[in-house]
Amino acid sequence: MHKTDRLSKIKRMRTWANWNMGVGILLMYLGYAFFAGYLGSWLKGSYIFMTCLLLIGFIGMMVSTVLFMISGMISTTAPQVECPSCKKATKMLGKEDACMFCGQPLLLEEDEHTAKSSQMEQKTT
Image (tube, rainbow, N blue to C red; front, top):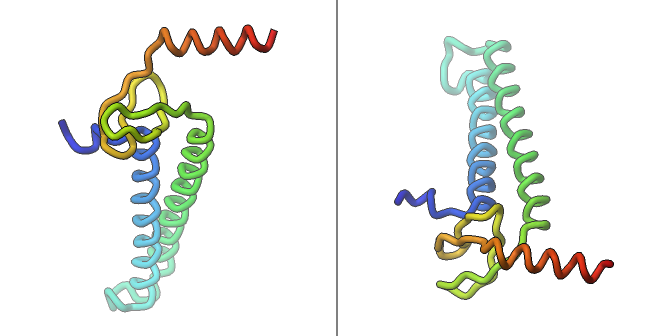
């Protein structure tokens, strides 16, 4: 089993957004470095190259910002379950997920979930 297979879905989304943010910043920095002539004197003053790298980096940073926002909104509505291995409360997305702390694969039992939802419906009526 690969290490990324054991990450929870929320943690995997946040990790991808974090890498996307770093790559975006790096692209923007490289665009400025090429423009200023630090990395290549043959590209000094290349406004088109600098603009392309700055735009691609900016778009990457905006995508990662949206991913962080989406993972935060999903995290607030995700049900919490107790991990059988480490006994910590972790959030689950979907029927299968992994513990955020120890990577233990978790399954949401359908009977328990439907029983709780039917109890909630009876309380509201």
